[in-house]
Image (cartoon, rainbow, N blue to C red; front, side, top):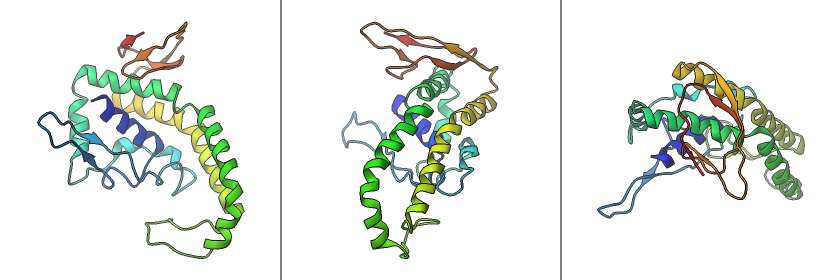
Length: 212
């Protein structure tokens, strides 16, 4: 269940608009005790691909897929109070760590610095071509266009956390947030299934399950 919740959290945060009704995939070993694993893939539809204001989108309103019915599964699981708390405070934990704005922007800048070495050759080779992909799937036509996309991604990383916190509060009718400080000396802390958590904002009146 924790990995399924992680999957939902990641898709919701990045605002993958080519998901929920599409690109839903799960697998399991063909054994008597094999459990389903959900596949996080084809996520370029997130981080502002379709519009520079995509950070405002609310994927809690995502459509159902007609194959695995994962929206139905997700909503049914949330009827369990412990799973609901695990999802809400787990999301908060990731917003304080994995999806923290400064961390993501650093990753974008570090990775783009490496990619930039090849981008002029990429533009020269593929500019003006079209692809068989979906809407707005096309090669980068100039270095200016590439840097514009990077700026959109950084802006998304900066603004998305606060937006999705508000969306979580609205969906679950929550009272607000409180800042929680964690300190570990030589170990790590797990909060609601999320390892190595950081101090930050958590949601009021939702249980925190701690392991050290």
